[in-house]
Length: 607
View 1: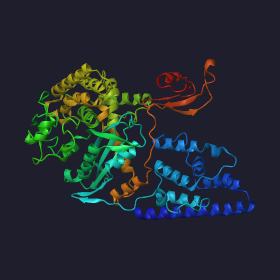
View 2: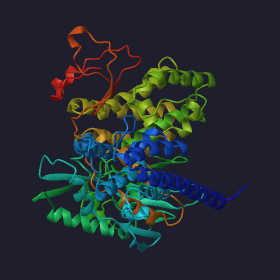
View 3: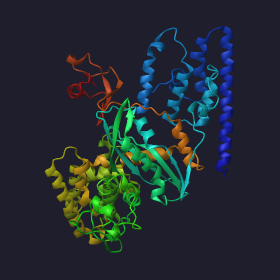
View 4: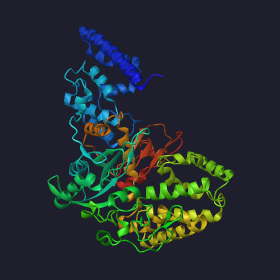
């Protein structure tokens, strides 16, 4: 079997040969057309033939001639919206008969956006540049020149690995350029988590991420990045530059559009191991591992926390280190100087409820050791069949369709959330024993209340009672030894709502999505930290965030059917709003979108 390097050499050789053939064809036809004085023939006849020969679809040709363009079937990201606006700005030029060629600066900027949007490799962009240079000789030859790839990467060696600091103030200022600020105060939320890079290596990233409350998309930006074979050895060392930046902007604020903006810290959202590391406290498997109450755990083959009414910890007690067994090495975390160490470290419901409690319940039912609570194979198969039947009716708002329980080991957090809130109460009804079903409903209903915006205080208290009942009943059903850290933490979840609002405000989902994007930027195992810095330097810093109340009307048509009174309205097959998407299938559904005009003063559209 050929080695990976041999395959790479063959691919590189094939690319060079293809590039050479395309370039020769262009030059030959270009020179011939120039002699005839007919450049229009080159543009409209030569290019399609070359594109067909190279195996590239005709729709891709528009990218070369009319940069930048996004097809109607491409993803509509924030950058895509910028493409459309750039293209719209040049409609008058493109529609005129004597249209001028785009300027070099415009073409280079368009290529940068196109490359970052579609993750085009440097080899592919360099090959494209060699083609475009036939028409624009001033274009750079190398993709790195177009992308303005950062050359010097001043990483800092620390114990256990190396660290690169992007800067908190720089990231915040860059993000605010694309946002509308309703007030002169912004709240920042931070996240730290580990990200394994390769299956065959212990190498991992520990990024420091941040979001701003005025950004409704909750898109994180990178503040700092650690790379090593394990988590950082010293929290003070890895957080030093971050804390220095944070103290400065908390004290002085930042300047935005000629006015001073105050900056405050909202919260630090992490999973349990990362919280313990950042707070410099005992882990969740320790006797004093609960960071919300002073309960001392019990060892029953694993650490359990069966009490539901233990005394709560306070920020003052934490800073005074009243519970010495809770802290490591009798040393306060450096974060204690800039934020509250108990109330500003909420429990992340993605790790706690979805990946924690929901998955634990499913494992007990499918693979549990106790025969009294483990479901039979026929019951498991029946639940899987019901989940499969739900799949065609699962709306597009859910990023993943339900899968069979046989694939539970590969379920993602979004699938577990779907089961916890929506599918579980349906597929478990009349399937599992009534005591187990009622126990699950306590958990599911409480989570519905805590994830709903504007829940009344009385209903928050009700959710708190439901979760406490769930934990107590959980111990009776499955055994006291199953009330581990995640199950116990449910008793503190309602208190987080009273501080931060719906649990989606302190969810790890946006950060988890960004970690996947970060990993996708790697091209090879060599120098991963430097690769990330270079890739991020190539991405345009300004990205227009779409209006929160904007609607996207997609796939226009004139096929009807429409009632006579509405025959003059515009027709679309798809409308996308901030919260939901509506589609028309089989040309047989008529939906009146006039209601949108009453909600957000949008023009009336028909579908």
